[in-house]
Image 1 (cartoon, helix red, strand yellow):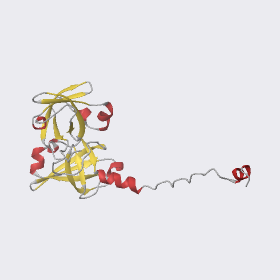
Image 2: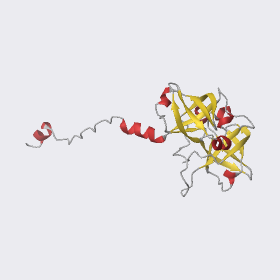
Image 3: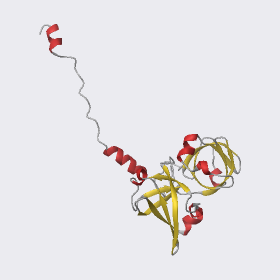
Length: 212
């Protein structure tokens, strides 16, 4: 589990057949084989590491459902280690399982902030609420506004400087994970089938055969 608070920006060093090698520093301070690190919001398992880089395997399904398949050597990615049991919840509950991708459509400065508009599918939009939480490329953000085809977030200078979001241009693809609470709530609200009464096996034929 993650919180969406980015710890550092890593650099993609190499793209292998089903694997990524990423240059990093902070997330390697206490790394072990098998640890989980979110790369642009995608939870991946560390399969190898050195003093200044780590490697993860990426299966075809992950490449299909996220923007990782579009990464190029030298590309910058947001990194976050799995939350420690005694850590703080600075963002919100993030699973690292991408729901879908969205497309950056517009960036507009307002004072010290930058508004970023993102378009996404209707199936995803139903789980997004104004002033609710959304994860964009692993970044925990607050939905500032909703539109018919997407949503907007407002990026403060600190978030802009510590993540890659403001490096995105209109047309770029980003990973999206909606608030997990919304998905569980929908599941709980679905009508459930009534449990079928189990037969005791006693009927008129049974009674006749047994002298009643």
